[in-house]
Length: 72
Image 1 (cartoon, rainbow, N blue to C red):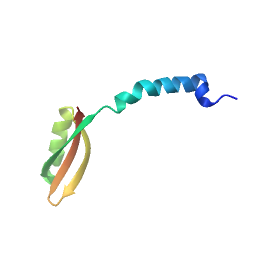
Image 2: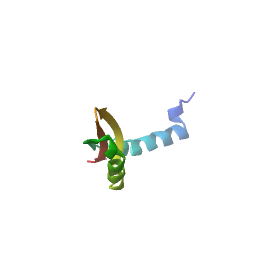
Image 3: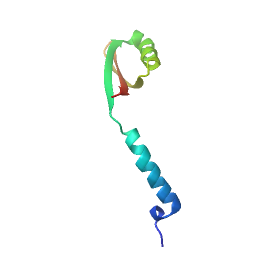
Image 4: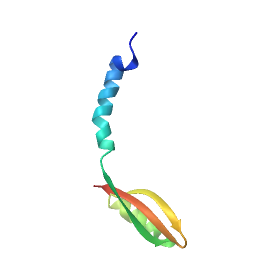
């Protein structure tokens, strides 16, 4: 009896994973921006418009630390 990986679909899936996974795991550089809470929305919009990817935020008292990613 054949396993899934020995079928046509299994081989196609394996080929797809082999070709796509390196692109998904490429190095990405993360950076942070520390601003006041009232400025957070505008800063996210600004950096996303410049092609940065918003990742997360951390509340630090009255400030917010925004985490972004960009291609390395």
